[in-house]
Length: 77
Image (tube, rainbow, N blue to C red; front, side, top):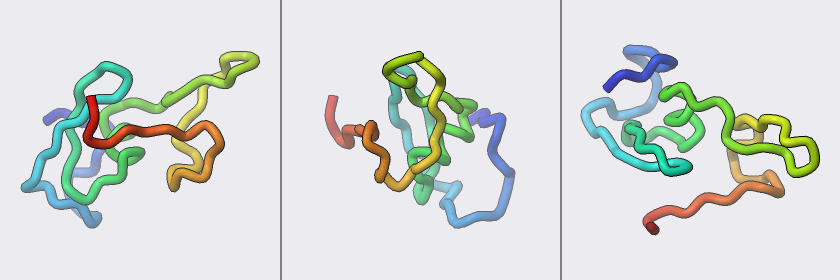
């Protein structure tokens, strides 16, 4: 797995358990223990949405789900 923004060791993730997921129609891989934001950033995804009015890029700030425009489906198609 090639993750350009991932440290090779340390942290609380289990590197022996690789998990696959998709985001905006693209397939990615992460590890057990990763947050969605950490897995996306490790795969080089730093823009996860756009503002409504000016289409300005939005990143992963507020990754605990407290943002008004946060929406994620888990386990669905």
